[in-house]
Amino acid sequence: MNAMTAFSLNGAAPLANADELEAALRQIGAARYHNLHPFHRLLHGGKLNKGQVQAWALNRYYYQSSIPIKDAVVISRFRDRATRVEWRHRIEDHDGDLSSEGGIERWLKLTEGLGLDSAYVESTQGILPATRFAVDAYVHFVRDRTPLEAIASSLTELFAPNLHEERIAGMLAHYDFVNPEIMSYFKRRLEQAPRDANFALTYVKQHATTPAEREAVCNALIFKTNVLWAQLDALHHAYVDGHIPPGAFVPQGS
Image (tube, rainbow, N blue to C red; front, side, top):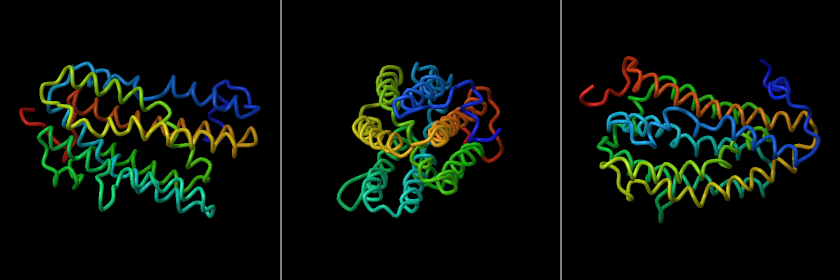
């Protein structure tokens, strides 16, 4: 199916203005965001064992560590200095700088706190093939599609804070091997994600000026929700259903 027509073929009329675009984006999030995935319900409800939580954190590291690479590609798409300056802090949020830690370091605190060796996590040797394919596809998307679509693909951040709140509360309540210190990544994103989402939402509402462009924005968000959903499909298949592919992380006791 052509990505430029997927949204309209799902029964939506052409979007006439920015307000209709925002409503459509929020509808996509309500129907497709990965908070609805069965794996997240297991994770947040305390239904996974430690090895399964380790597998989730290990695989998610590849996504987290690829975000600043993705954002550097987004910056490279813009000749407009103001947009580059605004987007640049996203790289600092994840990579940190000489005086402060970033999201990647906070994620490594999570994996270390779960008992994983940081060198092994950073090597990405044990991640699922589908994790690598999905995350790499996201980087390729922002490289190959229009700058408008590149920014639109980040709009899953509109829905992230509620998921982070649910994750913090659920994991602290249900797992004795989780403590507030190793959950610092999610606490920090409660502040960062709304700021980033507001900029991206304002940008697409201002710059998607035709029905075709608004449709492309919606399809970019659908693509991103698919990237996130595919990663959880792979985790569920490998670590809940028990079909771990060759070379992937095998929890102790499995």
